[in-house]
Image: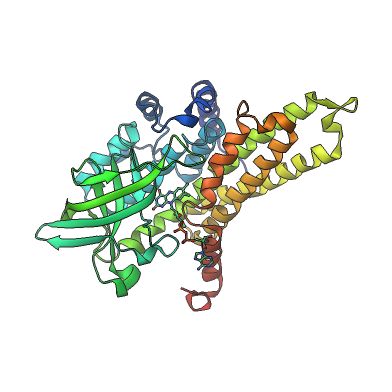
Length: 384
Ligand SMILES: Cc1cc2nc3c(=O)[nH]c(=O)nc-3n(C[C@H](O)[C@H](O)[C@H](O)COP(=O)(O)OP(=O)(O)OC[C@H]3O[C@@H](n4cnc5c(N)ncnc54)[C@H](O)[C@@H]3O)c2cc1C
C-alpha cells in the first residue's frame, strides 16, 4: 500500500496552501457577515485551476483526479471552510453536468463554472421532503418542447447567489417515488424564479435559502439523464461530494488543532505551560488520531473513485463520521482556549458554527448509516 501523495500532488498542495493562507485566511472572519462570495476571488481561483480541477479537459478542466481534488478542497478549507464550497459544488455538479447534459450545454456551463464566472447549486430538498428526498413534489409538466416547473426547493446552499442549479422535479406520479423524478439544468435568472436567504448560524457567505418556481419554462433539452431516472442516475454523484465534505470538515478541524497546540504551549496556569497537563494535551492527541483515521477514510474513498471501484458505503461513512469528528475536535479546541475561545476574536467559534451545517447538509448521519447498512445487507434489510 502506498500512503503518499505523488510529486505533482505535493507541489499542488504547497501552492494551494500558500494561496489560501495569503488570500483566503485573512478574510475568513470578515466574511462571517457577508452573503456572497467575492467575484474577483472566484475568478482568481478559477485562473489558478482550483475550481473543478477533476473535470474534463474538453470543458477547461485539468482531469487531475478525485484524490487531487480532495487535496485542493482541504487546503482551501484549512484557510476558509466556506470558500471550499466553491470547488465542492463545482466538482459535484460539474461532474453531473459533464456526464448527463447535452454536450453544448455542458460546454456552456462547465467552462464558466471552472473559470469562477458561474456558481452552481444543487436543488433537491423541499419543505416536505428532506431525508425522504425521493418523495419530492416540485412538478415538471411537459408542454411541447419545454417542461414547466412549479413548486419550492428549500435549504439550498448558495440559493441566492448561484447562477444555475441542478433541479430535481417530478415528471411522473407521486406514487412512482424516485422513478418519477427527473433532473434539469435550470439557469436561475428566469423572471418566474424568486429566491430567499436564510439567517443561519454559520456558513453565512455561502448562504442557504429557498428557490420558488412559478411556471418556469425549461427547454426539454435541459433534462439531465433520462426522464424518470434523474434521481437514480444523478444521485450517484453524491458518493463523490460526501468524501469531499469529509475532507472539507476535517481540514477546518486540523487548522484548529494546530492553532490550539501553539496556544497551549504558550499559555500558563499553576506556574506551567498548560500543554504539560494531560487533561489539555490528551484530548489534542486524541484529535490527531481521529483526524488521521478520518482523513485516510476520505482519501481512500476518493482513491476508490479514481480507480472506478464501488465506494458508496465508504462515501456514506465519510459523510456521517468526518463532520461529527470535526465538530467535536473544534469544540475541544475552543475549550482549550479557555474564555478567549468563546470570543468572536478567535476563528474557532466560527469554524464550530460553520462545520455544524454539514452534519445535516448532503444527508444526515442517520441516512448515511441506512446507506451503509443497505450496502452491507441489501435493500430488503433496511426501511427503504
Ligand atoms: C448547511 C446545509 C446545507 C444544505 N445544502 C443543501 C443543498 O445545497 N441542496 C439541497 O437540496 N439540500 C441542502 N440541504 C438540505 C439537507 O440535505 C436536508 O436538510 C437533509 O437532507 C435533512 O432533511 P430535513 O432537514 O428535511 O430533515 P428530516 O428529513 O425532516 O429529518 C429530521 C430528523 O429525522 C431524522 N430522520 C429522518 N428520516 C429518518 C430515518 N429513516 N431514520 C432515522 N432518522 C431519520 C433525520 O436524520 C433528522 O435528524 C442543506 C442543509 C444544510 C443544513
